[in-house]
Amino acid sequence: MKYIIILSLIIFLCVGEINALNISAIKGKQNTRDFEFSKTILVNGVEFENGFLKMPLDGYKTKKYSNIKILSKDFYRKIFDCFKLKECTVNRNKKDVLTKVENIFPLKSPLRIANANVSFDDELIVVFGIVKEKKDENKIWISYPKDFEIKNEVFKNNLENLIKREFLKTLKDKIE
Image (tube, rainbow, N blue to C red):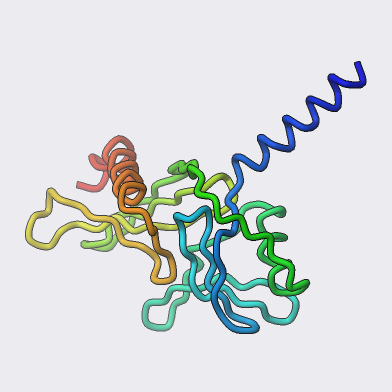
């Protein structure tokens, strides 16, 4: 019985790590760094100020938007440790990243017609814009936050197709 509990605990811990974004590279200075996660996602300009992490903000005129947010305490701790303790656990292995469109919200703008909240391994959530093509209103494209990049083209195409499918399934007829 004792061995079954230990084995279950080991499996649980390993599965938790499988479904977690890992830090695969770090660049930057003392209080501002760029993080690469799971050799796929790049978040630029993460700051450490007054003992807290500050994710990069997007802006339009005088408004600021938080389009990149941390969802889990463990993920926050991984990044926090890189700044505060100067102990980063870097894992250069590539791993698949689980993506899920959490919500799609219609907007009143004639071009940016909706926002899509997409989670990555339930640790990071990013707001993407769904934008109508100026010349062909039946076509849409996906807008990224300025400090967020996808490094893998196949992953990027799959992500954009997922967002477009979810948009068409949930909101297309409500916006037209």
